[in-house]
Length: 77
Image 1 (spheres, rainbow, N blue to C red):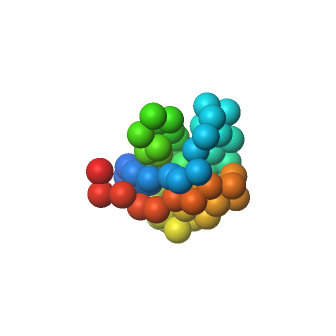
Image 2 (image 1 turned 120 degrees about the horizontal axis):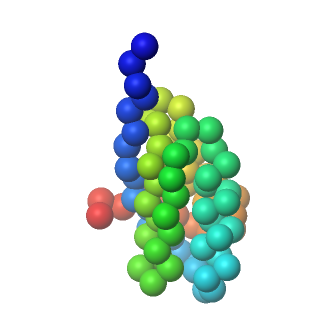
């Protein structure tokens, strides 16, 4: 059995206004099956997510941020 491959996706978020927004996003995205780690950078509005692309897509990640009440788009950096 081969190990699942983890990829890092970086999203840019909009609508951040407070540090508690960070916890909300981390919780919502972290619930997804296949997500191993979520790191939200409040100052730069970056969300770094380590996930298994076989189990959870970038669209799923963007949708989870949307569920938390914020707009996110995939970022190249």
